[in-house]
Length: 113
Image (cartoon, rainbow, N blue to C red; front, side, top):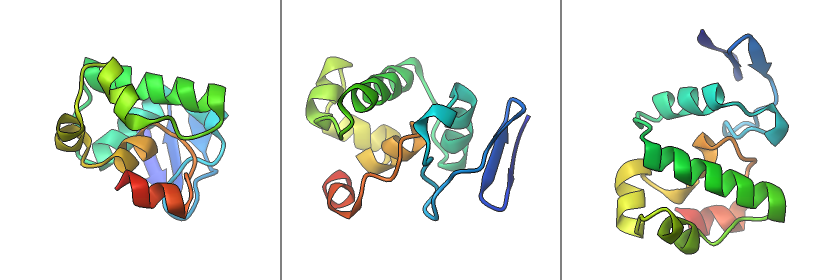
């Protein structure tokens, strides 16, 4: 069951309390697939297997590198171009938020929009 209450998201009997004021998950270790499903639902994005490949890849790269991965190379590796990414997610920034990654900062957000 998924519910939202004053900035907290509850999914699969786990509460994600640590969202910033823009809705980014602060602690990436609190992430679960249910969190991503709920964020996608809020953003009116229907997740497909390509979506999940992309989400898993950017999460993995971010968690290993500790930084924003080059989205062009990430998209290429799962067979998407920038136009397809925008058509499916609206922007790299929306993908980042749906993937349960922390706020990337103002400079990165300008690049990701």
